[in-house]
Length: 76
Image (cartoon, rainbow, N blue to C red; front, side):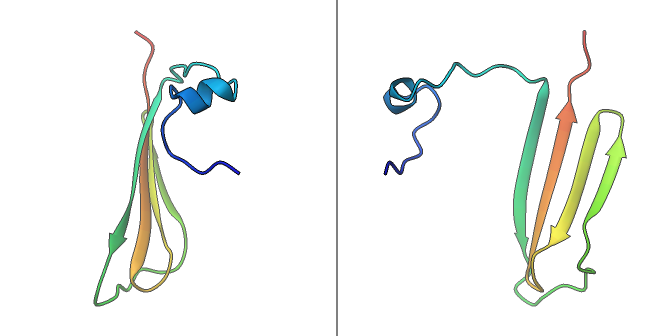
């Protein structure tokens, strides 16, 4: 068993035969919002779709909400 978080260009990744990363044309950010006093958000996933952007959130419980934003680059 190997447990680690040393990236896809590490010696371990090379040893495992992982390929070099490629550009997928997408970038993303995600996070966890914490509401110490709780929130009133309905427990359902909500997504917003736009011109090359997808964003959304889903409550995990009454104090935590997972959120994300994904952007697809337009060809130049």
